[in-house]
Length: 308
View 1 (cartoon, rainbow, N blue to C red):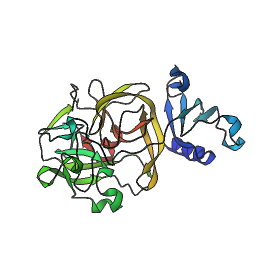
View 2 (spheres, one colour):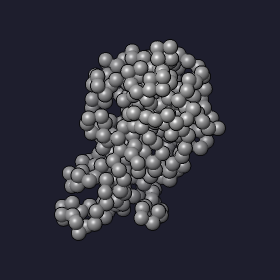
View 3 (tube, rainbow, N blue to C red):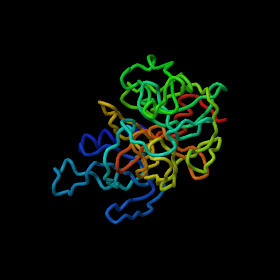
View 4 (cartoon, rainbow, N blue to C red):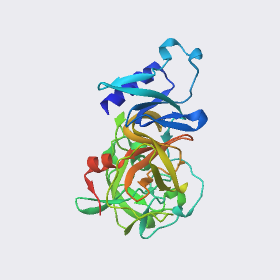
């Protein structure tokens, strides 16, 4: 993480066009929609908002073609994509993930009663008791700027934007990421779970397994979300530090995954899973060109969670 974070700071200072860096096994040829395998974590992806010809850049802005990290040579690949931002804003009605679910399923409409529209990640356990997950920014954390002020906040299913009211409360926030920090590994809220939970990815036949998997380059992953329902994507970067538009500020998230785009505003919190149902990541940001997720293992370790 430290090396990628340092590289992101270095590259961002070199060019304001850079918003993220990440590791991959493949070099991508975007204009030809092709890729070439280079080797396990041998490619350093530098994400830019726009790819510009060298002739239009100052010499100080030209990015290197290769770099050395911990003595290993990495091929540099410039990947053009719109910068990500958090996916919890005004949403348009779309599919059945927006209705009331009893029991709860992963990937359905859910948010703090003080928020608008987000997605229920999945159910886990903390200290042996059932808990649910969504994003920290799906609570009032963005405006409160103090995690202690958010503890006890009520979570409703469906989201308030989809009609969720006091009668739809499924729990209260007991812990969350301190998003007042500038560099983060998670964007997660943990809440008590008062409604029965079924480990099923909504709108799919995927049954969730009691475990998580490490992401691999070009792995096919699935998600169910409040806005776009159930769909799939490919992992582009297996570990990345990215700058994300986070409300009125920009925050840096490290050890994230970056995938091809498969989200829209309101999908924040969506579980990203493998085809066989193992949890990979928690979706929290995206753009028209990419989706970004928090790794499952980082959430589990930071909050001391376990599976059913």
